[in-house]
Image 1 (tube, rainbow, N blue to C red):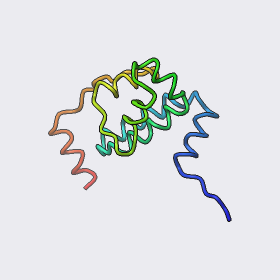
Image 2: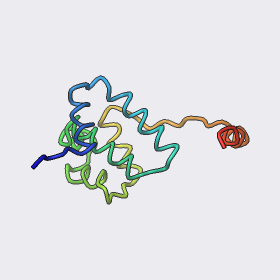
Image 3: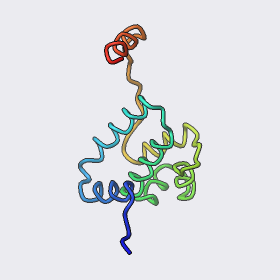
Image 4: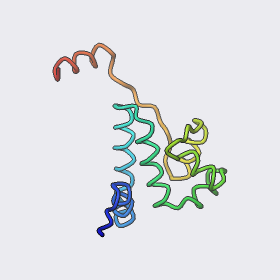
Length: 114
């Protein structure tokens, strides 16, 4: 019987083989989160990056326990903002605000596509 791999397993293998792609991966996943608001997808992707970078190293650097990192990024996780920020810092990133275009400009762009 053939054992199929999940998309997450394929992404994780790719990032292990191409660590220089992690920066772009993180940028894309936060751009997608900004568009969709899909917290589960964001946590799933951060979980992949944490495994590639090493959950133990992230736990030590973030001040969280290994279990705390895993719980914060779990499928059923509802992490506190401080925990996500600590995990991101441990991965070598920070959460920074990005100015959005005025709401009227967003609405006119939506009309162009609608």
